[in-house]
Length: 122
Image 1 (cartoon, rainbow, N blue to C red):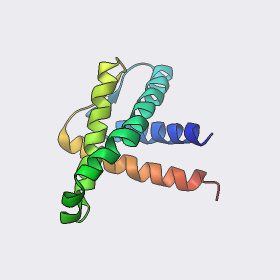
Image 2 (tube, one colour):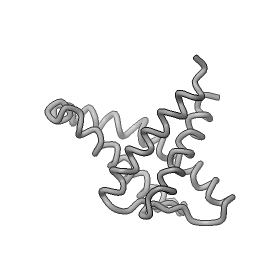
Image 3 (cartoon, rainbow, N blue to C red):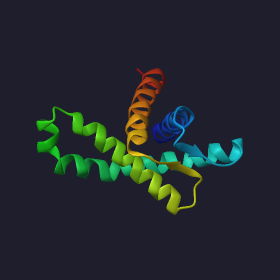
């Protein structure tokens, strides 16, 4: 159940980012957009569960050197990678532009944090 809630939270956060930024788009009708966002949320979760920890571990000295600022760009890179995988799988979701993915990574982090706080069991 916790996994399903996380996927729904990620889908909502990705939807908010697509709504706020012009260079992030979800293709299709409303029903297709929901399915696309759920698929992209699954991809985003897998990328953040497998690839992100490896990248963060390998770049740990630089993260410390930049006082954590590099984490923002790592999150943007994970969003970019998610976009490329989604495009390769034929999902109608794309994120273009470096600063767009940086801004979207911030929005996704904030929205996910707020929704997780509201939906937590505590």
